[in-house]
Image (cartoon, rainbow, N blue to C red; front, side, top):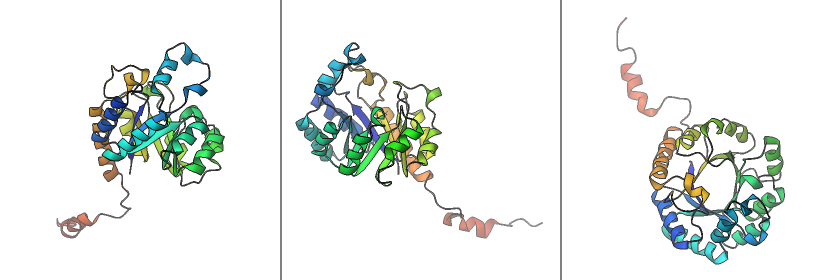
Length: 266
Protein backbone atom coordinates (compact mmCIF):
# COMPACT_ATOMS: atom_id res chain seq x y z
CA UNK A 1 0.00 0.00 0.00
CA UNK A 2 1.58 3.24 -1.16
CA UNK A 3 1.73 6.03 1.44
CA UNK A 4 1.63 9.69 0.41
CA UNK A 5 3.86 12.25 2.13
CA UNK A 6 3.22 15.99 1.91
CA UNK A 7 6.65 17.60 2.16
CA UNK A 8 5.78 20.93 3.77
CA UNK A 9 9.43 21.38 4.68
CA UNK A 10 10.10 25.05 5.34
CA UNK A 11 7.21 26.37 3.24
CA UNK A 12 5.54 27.65 6.41
CA UNK A 13 8.39 30.14 6.93
CA UNK A 14 8.02 29.87 10.70
CA UNK A 15 4.34 30.83 10.72
CA UNK A 16 2.70 28.17 12.89
CA UNK A 17 -0.81 29.10 11.80
CA UNK A 18 0.26 28.66 8.18
CA UNK A 19 1.99 25.38 9.05
CA UNK A 20 -1.23 24.04 10.57
CA UNK A 21 -3.25 25.23 7.58
CA UNK A 22 -0.86 23.23 5.40
CA UNK A 23 -1.25 20.17 7.63
CA UNK A 24 -5.04 20.46 7.36
CA UNK A 25 -4.83 20.79 3.58
CA UNK A 26 -2.52 17.76 3.41
CA UNK A 27 -4.98 15.70 5.42
CA UNK A 28 -7.93 16.82 3.32
CA UNK A 29 -5.96 16.03 0.15
CA UNK A 30 -5.57 12.41 1.19
CA UNK A 31 -2.00 12.44 2.51
CA UNK A 32 -0.81 9.94 5.08
CA UNK A 33 1.95 12.18 6.46
CA UNK A 34 2.73 15.87 6.83
CA UNK A 35 6.50 16.25 6.80
CA UNK A 36 8.74 19.05 8.04
CA UNK A 37 12.48 19.62 8.42
CA UNK A 38 14.46 19.73 11.66
CA UNK A 39 17.62 21.81 11.94
CA UNK A 40 19.40 24.42 14.05
CA UNK A 41 20.69 27.55 12.33
CA UNK A 42 23.39 27.75 15.03
CA UNK A 43 25.03 24.73 13.39
CA UNK A 44 24.60 25.91 9.78
CA UNK A 45 28.00 26.25 8.11
CA UNK A 46 28.92 29.01 5.68
CA UNK A 47 27.89 28.39 2.09
CA UNK A 48 26.03 29.63 -0.97
CA UNK A 49 22.93 30.05 1.23
CA UNK A 50 24.65 33.07 2.79
CA UNK A 51 24.35 35.03 -0.47
CA UNK A 52 21.10 33.76 -2.00
CA UNK A 53 18.76 34.51 0.91
CA UNK A 54 18.35 30.96 2.17
CA UNK A 55 20.07 31.56 5.51
CA UNK A 56 17.30 34.01 6.36
CA UNK A 57 14.74 31.37 5.40
CA UNK A 58 16.51 28.81 7.59
CA UNK A 59 16.32 31.27 10.48
CA UNK A 60 12.62 31.99 9.99
CA UNK A 61 11.61 28.37 9.41
CA UNK A 62 13.59 26.76 12.23
CA UNK A 63 11.39 24.66 14.51
CA UNK A 64 12.38 24.43 18.16
CA UNK A 65 11.23 21.63 20.45
CA UNK A 66 8.00 23.37 21.47
CA UNK A 67 7.05 23.97 17.84
CA UNK A 68 7.75 20.33 17.01
CA UNK A 69 5.41 19.23 19.80
CA UNK A 70 2.80 21.74 18.65
CA UNK A 71 2.84 20.41 15.07
CA UNK A 72 2.96 16.77 16.17
CA UNK A 73 0.00 17.27 18.50
CA UNK A 74 -1.97 18.99 15.75
CA UNK A 75 -1.25 16.11 13.36
CA UNK A 76 -2.49 13.68 16.02
CA UNK A 77 -5.59 15.81 16.57
CA UNK A 78 -6.71 15.74 12.93
CA UNK A 79 -5.48 12.22 12.17
CA UNK A 80 -2.46 12.53 9.88
CA UNK A 81 1.05 11.22 10.48
CA UNK A 82 3.86 13.55 11.52
CA UNK A 83 7.34 13.20 10.05
CA UNK A 84 10.48 15.30 9.77
CA UNK A 85 13.87 15.23 8.06
CA UNK A 86 17.02 15.45 10.17
CA UNK A 87 20.43 16.70 9.08
CA UNK A 88 22.57 15.82 12.09
CA UNK A 89 22.56 13.64 15.19
CA UNK A 90 21.63 16.71 17.24
CA UNK A 91 18.55 17.16 15.05
CA UNK A 92 17.66 13.50 15.50
CA UNK A 93 18.08 13.81 19.27
CA UNK A 94 15.58 16.67 19.30
CA UNK A 95 13.11 14.85 17.05
CA UNK A 96 13.38 11.71 19.17
CA UNK A 97 11.84 13.64 22.07
CA UNK A 98 8.75 14.21 19.93
CA UNK A 99 8.31 11.07 17.84
CA UNK A 100 10.10 7.74 17.45
CA UNK A 101 8.18 5.98 14.70
CA UNK A 102 9.29 7.65 11.44
CA UNK A 103 12.34 9.71 10.57
CA UNK A 104 13.51 10.96 7.17
CA UNK A 105 17.14 11.14 6.04
CA UNK A 106 17.48 13.71 3.23
CA UNK A 107 19.53 12.96 0.14
CA UNK A 108 22.38 15.20 1.20
CA UNK A 109 22.91 13.03 4.29
CA UNK A 110 22.45 9.69 2.54
CA UNK A 111 26.18 8.98 2.99
CA UNK A 112 26.21 10.06 6.64
CA UNK A 113 26.60 6.61 8.21
CA UNK A 114 26.88 7.98 11.74
CA UNK A 115 23.53 9.76 11.47
CA UNK A 116 21.87 6.82 9.71
CA UNK A 117 23.07 4.34 12.32
CA UNK A 118 21.89 6.62 15.14
CA UNK A 119 18.43 6.84 13.58
CA UNK A 120 18.38 3.08 13.06
CA UNK A 121 18.95 2.65 16.80
CA UNK A 122 16.41 5.24 17.92
CA UNK A 123 13.51 5.20 15.44
CA UNK A 124 11.19 2.49 14.22
CA UNK A 125 11.34 3.33 10.51
CA UNK A 126 13.87 5.20 8.37
CA UNK A 127 13.06 6.73 5.00
CA UNK A 128 16.32 7.50 3.19
CA UNK A 129 16.34 9.64 0.05
CA UNK A 130 19.14 8.60 -2.27
CA UNK A 131 19.80 11.65 -4.46
CA UNK A 132 23.48 12.62 -4.87
CA UNK A 133 24.63 9.06 -3.98
CA UNK A 134 25.64 6.14 -6.18
CA UNK A 135 24.57 2.56 -5.50
CA UNK A 136 27.86 1.54 -3.89
CA UNK A 137 27.60 4.47 -1.46
CA UNK A 138 24.00 3.61 -0.66
CA UNK A 139 24.92 -0.03 -0.05
CA UNK A 140 27.62 1.10 2.37
CA UNK A 141 25.23 3.44 4.19
CA UNK A 142 22.65 0.73 4.89
CA UNK A 143 24.88 -2.31 5.47
CA UNK A 144 24.39 -2.13 9.26
CA UNK A 145 20.64 -1.54 9.17
CA UNK A 146 17.80 -3.89 9.94
CA UNK A 147 16.52 -4.91 6.50
CA UNK A 148 12.91 -4.43 7.60
CA UNK A 149 13.39 -0.96 9.14
CA UNK A 150 14.32 1.23 6.20
CA UNK A 151 13.01 2.31 2.83
CA UNK A 152 15.15 3.75 0.05
CA UNK A 153 13.54 6.61 -1.87
CA UNK A 154 14.70 7.33 -5.38
CA UNK A 155 15.39 11.02 -5.75
CA UNK A 156 17.08 13.41 -8.17
CA UNK A 157 18.31 16.40 -6.17
CA UNK A 158 17.39 19.07 -8.69
CA UNK A 159 14.81 21.74 -7.85
CA UNK A 160 12.64 21.49 -9.85
CA UNK A 161 13.61 18.28 -11.63
CA UNK A 162 13.07 18.00 -15.39
CA UNK A 163 11.26 14.94 -16.74
CA UNK A 164 14.21 13.84 -18.87
CA UNK A 165 16.43 13.24 -15.81
CA UNK A 166 13.87 11.62 -13.47
CA UNK A 167 15.25 8.11 -14.21
CA UNK A 168 12.46 6.08 -12.61
CA UNK A 169 14.05 2.72 -13.59
CA UNK A 170 16.66 3.37 -10.89
CA UNK A 171 13.95 2.29 -8.43
CA UNK A 172 14.54 -1.28 -9.61
CA UNK A 173 18.19 -1.01 -8.56
CA UNK A 174 17.18 0.27 -5.13
CA UNK A 175 14.88 -2.73 -4.77
CA UNK A 176 18.01 -4.90 -4.77
CA UNK A 177 19.22 -3.06 -1.65
CA UNK A 178 15.97 -2.65 0.27
CA UNK A 179 12.76 -4.52 0.91
CA UNK A 180 10.92 -1.20 0.64
CA UNK A 181 11.34 1.58 -1.94
CA UNK A 182 9.81 4.94 -2.64
CA UNK A 183 10.03 8.07 -4.77
CA UNK A 184 10.83 11.57 -3.57
CA UNK A 185 9.52 13.56 -6.52
CA UNK A 186 10.91 17.00 -7.30
CA UNK A 187 9.21 17.40 -10.68
CA UNK A 188 6.41 19.86 -11.23
CA UNK A 189 3.00 18.27 -11.47
CA UNK A 190 2.06 14.72 -10.49
CA UNK A 191 2.78 12.77 -13.68
CA UNK A 192 6.13 11.32 -12.55
CA UNK A 193 4.67 10.28 -9.21
CA UNK A 194 1.78 8.50 -10.92
CA UNK A 195 4.18 6.62 -13.20
CA UNK A 196 6.33 5.61 -10.21
CA UNK A 197 3.41 3.57 -8.89
CA UNK A 198 4.10 0.94 -11.53
CA UNK A 199 7.47 0.31 -9.83
CA UNK A 200 5.77 -0.79 -6.63
CA UNK A 201 6.79 2.18 -4.49
CA UNK A 202 5.70 2.12 -0.85
CA UNK A 203 6.07 5.89 -0.39
CA UNK A 204 5.67 8.96 -2.58
CA UNK A 205 6.91 12.29 -1.26
CA UNK A 206 5.86 15.55 -2.94
CA UNK A 207 6.65 19.14 -2.00
CA UNK A 208 3.38 20.69 -0.91
CA UNK A 209 1.99 24.18 -0.39
CA UNK A 210 -1.33 25.98 -0.28
CA UNK A 211 -0.09 28.99 -2.25
CA UNK A 212 2.67 29.05 -4.89
CA UNK A 213 3.10 32.79 -4.32
CA UNK A 214 4.23 32.39 -0.72
CA UNK A 215 7.88 33.34 -0.01
CA UNK A 216 10.62 30.74 -0.34
CA UNK A 217 12.05 28.73 -3.21
CA UNK A 218 10.18 25.50 -2.50
CA UNK A 219 6.73 27.10 -2.56
CA UNK A 220 7.28 27.92 -6.22
CA UNK A 221 7.41 24.33 -7.46
CA UNK A 222 5.39 22.59 -4.75
CA UNK A 223 2.03 21.16 -5.76
CA UNK A 224 -1.28 22.55 -4.52
CA UNK A 225 -4.06 20.69 -2.66
CA UNK A 226 -6.10 19.97 -5.80
CA UNK A 227 -3.08 18.28 -7.41
CA UNK A 228 -2.27 16.35 -4.24
CA UNK A 229 -5.88 15.19 -4.08
CA UNK A 230 -5.66 13.89 -7.65
CA UNK A 231 -2.44 12.07 -6.78
CA UNK A 232 -4.02 10.48 -3.72
CA UNK A 233 -6.91 9.24 -5.88
CA UNK A 234 -4.46 7.67 -8.34
CA UNK A 235 -2.73 5.98 -5.41
CA UNK A 236 -6.03 4.52 -4.19
CA UNK A 237 -6.60 3.04 -7.64
CA UNK A 238 -3.02 1.75 -7.86
CA UNK A 239 -3.30 0.09 -4.45
CA UNK A 240 -6.14 -1.94 -5.94
CA UNK A 241 -5.02 -2.71 -9.49
CA UNK A 242 -1.38 -3.44 -8.60
CA UNK A 243 -2.26 -5.84 -5.79
CA UNK A 244 -0.92 -9.28 -6.70
CA UNK A 245 -3.82 -11.71 -7.01
CA UNK A 246 -1.64 -14.61 -8.14
CA UNK A 247 -1.23 -16.23 -11.55
CA UNK A 248 -4.54 -18.15 -11.60
CA UNK A 249 -7.79 -16.82 -12.99
CA UNK A 250 -10.12 -14.87 -10.69
CA UNK A 251 -13.20 -16.31 -8.96
CA UNK A 252 -15.34 -13.76 -10.77
CA UNK A 253 -14.33 -15.45 -14.06
CA UNK A 254 -15.77 -18.84 -13.11
CA UNK A 255 -19.15 -18.19 -14.72
CA UNK A 256 -17.51 -17.15 -17.98
CA UNK A 257 -15.16 -20.14 -17.83
CA UNK A 258 -18.01 -22.58 -17.15
CA UNK A 259 -20.76 -21.26 -19.40
CA UNK A 260 -19.03 -19.51 -22.27
CA UNK A 261 -16.07 -21.73 -23.12
CA UNK A 262 -16.88 -23.67 -26.33
CA UNK A 263 -20.26 -22.04 -26.81
CA UNK A 264 -19.99 -22.27 -30.60
CA UNK A 265 -19.96 -25.60 -32.39
CA UNK A 266 -17.23 -26.45 -34.81
